Image 1 (cartoon, rainbow, N blue to C red):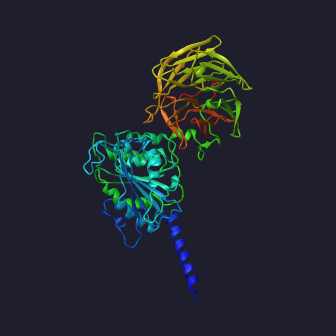
Image 2: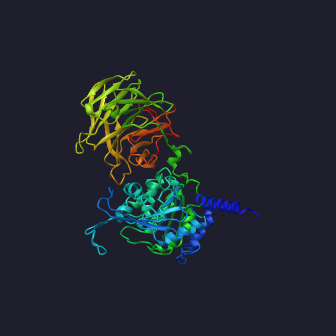
Image 3: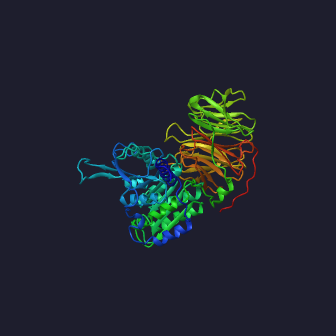
Length: 610
């Protein structure tokens, strides 16, 4: 017989082991069988067995909080609830489930049961109540409101709500403590974070992951509002065009769901969303029932959906492979963005030299940097103050525009500059194979028409004017077309280049997707590949347009990052795309080769009217 002290020690070690392992590695499940089970139980009783309080399992604790000083939603009051499971140990930051429209006893009971059975990891639930601006904050319980923010917060497609969750809600939740003094500590990994909600909360939970896939990778949307309230109907198109993100999604809806026909059919919208996600290679599943705008069926299947979302944890949720033909044409499997190991103050004017090296200006630092094959930036010139755009000529000369000084400069191999033209507050610049320089000039203020200049042997000449905030410029590979982006609209203009270098047949030809806030494309720079595709640096990422002016692919930068400010093809084979958001520089090797405008023109087969 073991001595009592040794027996007690062995028993204590056993308890520690049991308390650690289940929280980190839930039991795997058969995904297909589980989805079939979910579909069968959709019309089952409520609450389901796993949603009933079980006296034989440990129960979590609920904490309350309020945000009344939001910087993102000024004047609003947002209540929130934090569920902390009994098994939670603050020494091991917990997984997270954010639920829109609150977190109640039912969700708490489900997590109590699933955590106890080791079917999901130990996770903390945070339920957010949408904000309200009260006329009389002290007049509870019958308070009148100036504004109810639910649709504004949850239905919008911009970064406001994700920023609110990440910078205000979760920090506020982590200031709370349980009754026994345990502080709330959440894992920082997006692979450990999930979001859920119903109706407007359904689309809001998806937006959390879509805008911030680095922070949310698992989504359960119930009767989601993917209709034309605040742009939700645009999601299927964006999903089909965008390079797949590491997100796992479960959708639930009913065949008669149409809360308000003014905005469209909820059910049709969810079918479209599921179709787009499947087309784009996402790990997506659904349960379609026969019901209207009713969240109860989605609650019935909540336990099994949680099992499905977390079924192979801690294995990371991976990006899928899209059926988008343009993404397949230009991207390489397994090749993702890589970050240059240096930050800049205001990187702009990316340009590639003949050997594939990249030059960029950093105006606040008054430097022009050269990035070689080793990926390490080195100072090329200390005369880079105010340089906004750069381009190489056929003889290897680097040209730049300095808008504050209203001049175009040429920078020699030793980094010294000379003035080429004056009186032009330029932004974009491109140099052709014969040394002709084209420069866009956006105008000193928003209502001042832009101009496009040609600088050649005969001097400088205006070849077009009247655009709004002209920015990036580029030539087609055969030199027959000239492109100019408008930063404040959704258009890139196309011109036919005449034999004498003048422009004709001007059209707002390339149609871009625009962000919700700000409501413009933010197009700042252009590049082309040898297939005739146009690459546009925008707020959404790099939008890739076909010869007929349509966006067929979108390459977003890794989050968090800012709008794309500049881009160019570079590398030894000119098959590496260099991109900057102003502070970071990213690279990505592609299947296609970029075309340098200082090269001799090359013919591109016509894609047809398509």
